[in-house]
Length: 270
Image (tube, rainbow, N blue to C red; front, side):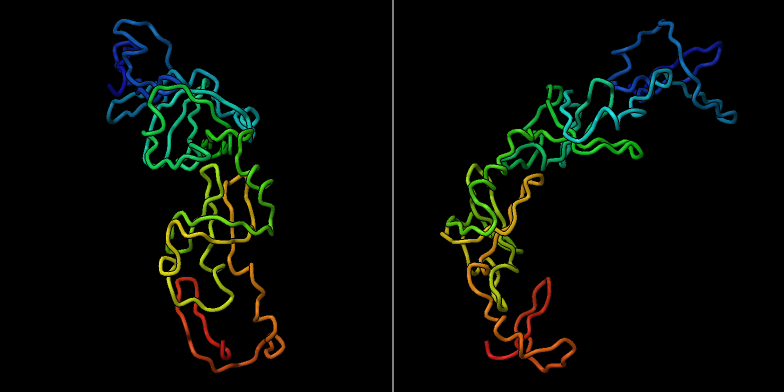
């Protein structure tokens, strides 16, 4: 199951399954039968162990040699799903190059927790190139059709600076997520809750289903993310006090809250 032994004149050499072709071979028996006459290339010859490594794919052009030209960002490709892991799926293209579709790139709207629930091994897949690294021989793919990017519609509906009335979908340690429609969510980071110090965790302030107003701060169409804020709906009262302080000034103040991202200290009442 790991290869085929080839008689090269009274001596057997091993043709490993990985060296049979640029495309992944599931089992050597799918390509070869005992008695077949084949052309091979000697890859290694170990005198002490008397082992000879052979290859057939090395007789063919390396598909990675011009991959950077053929697989530019945004190029549409097709292939078959040849592997599934917890973090994504591997798609084999016609020339033998395997591309990785990370779990976050499987769908624009569906929350995929296991790639095996979304894709099946052996099924055809259409994908788009995200990156091509010929030095590391890695091809990043996405199944999210750029032409159907729903985040473009979100940006059109909710331009930066707009106030949006929505609902909380879930709270997390670093903030909360709200509904933006079409199965998409936006993040309100905990640092954008209030201009002042925060002593409570997000789940102490909000619950799933709560109606809430937020401001659109940024929408990243390519990465499929929206940053929202609550404090931006109100004026920053600290601006009125800026004149009371100067850079380098030493202050005695009380720590009011310690968070994972920093410490809040009260400069004066409120």
